[in-house]
Amino acid sequence: MQLTQKPTHVRYLILLMLFLVTTINYADRATIAIAGSSLQKDLGIDAVTLGYIFSAFGWAYVAGQIPGGWLLDRFGSKKVYALSIFTWSLFTVLQGFVGEFGMSTAVVALFMLRFLVGLAEAPSFPGNARIVAAWFPTAERGTASAIFNSAQYFATVLFAPLMGWIVYSFGWEHVFIVMGILGIVFSLVWLKVIYSPREHPRINDAEFKHIADNGGMVDMDQKGKKSDGPKWDYIRQLLTNRMMLGVYLGQYCINGITYFFLTWFPVYLVQERGMTILKAGFIASLPAICGFIGGVLGGVISDYLLRKGHSLTFARKAPIIAGLLVSSSIVACNYVDVEWMVVGFMALAFFGKGVGALGWAVVSDTSPKQIAGLSGGLFNTFGNIASITTPIVIGYIISSTGSFKWALVFVGANALVAVFSYLVIVGPIKRVVLKEPPAKGGDEVTGNLSQAHS
Image 1 (cartoon, rainbow, N blue to C red):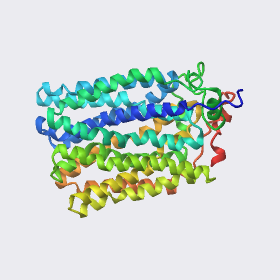
Image 2: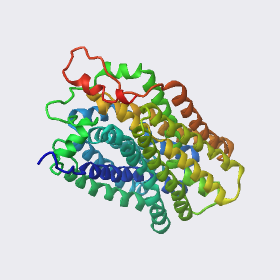
Image 3: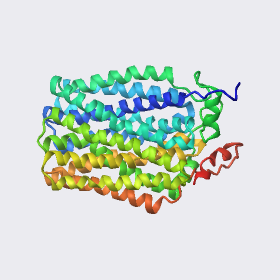
Image 4: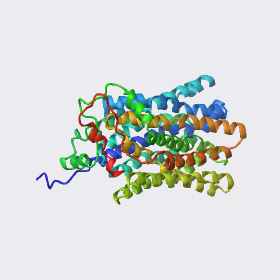
């Protein structure tokens, strides 16, 4: 009877939850961008100050990656992620009340609250990568990672028009309150739905066996296998691995493009292209639709290439390199004045960036089992240094040149450096096998799961 049992598809419900939580995650990051122009006017702040406020999230998000990854390895994805969702949502709500203070106090309060949102969100993407590594076989992991990652575009598609309307109709404060309450409610849903594969009440043996036999790290959160603390020698091994360093550089550059869209893009539409914030909210959703389509397509193409017998290296690198070359077309916006052409090039650039954004699939393919959360945290630390540098650099470029032209050149250059990194530095993509001083049985076998695909 067991042999003829049809497998359940609980992993798709888990993927839906990752998609929804990442949508909320990115919507909460983007609140400040939609509110930015109105907020700048109300608080009387200049472009450089706004750039620093945009960057506040990134400082804490980067600082929290390694501790967040360790917490995931120590206490498991379910509890740590639920607390993360609740906390960042609460800090989002509180941003809606900074206007009650005087200008200088409001700026400091807003910076601090954005900082705390970044700190609370730190475990989110390492948590996503851990859950995908546990729930999905190797040949499904590219699509699964692309789907949760594409939620960043879906967040803009779904929420940018809504948030633009809220700012236009009720004022910028209400954006933070509405989005924060939504996240608090979702944190309760998360606790009801998320489990590890071995503990989920709705999974059957056939689905569990399919995942376990095809590369899923199903016992990652098994009781009794908790990490004692950050393994500094493990981190050293990752930091001296050429493949991982190339992946980290690539992710930094890819996130440079992401954070232009998350921070300055609506301001660009209002200040450089003369749109109202209501119109900018709707226009910002068009490139995001293309980014979403590209994001899902990149993962589907990658897994298709893998199933057709191509190496893991080719299957991951081909969409990344092709997509990022397309995304460098953002620079063409400097040479057109017609509104639909500007939006068209932005949409093309975001589509290409979506196709190329397979970094989290690569993390799921390469992370050692012992420190999957920590490995994802380290990857995200490097990637999200761009969340600090990009808003600030663009703020200074606008302040010194009076326009966005060189800012777009800066964004396009990020895409080309990422292409160089994957072409020249990364080399073959395979799971990293760590050297452990006290050998622990069983880890080496799981550590080699993806080697056959390389």
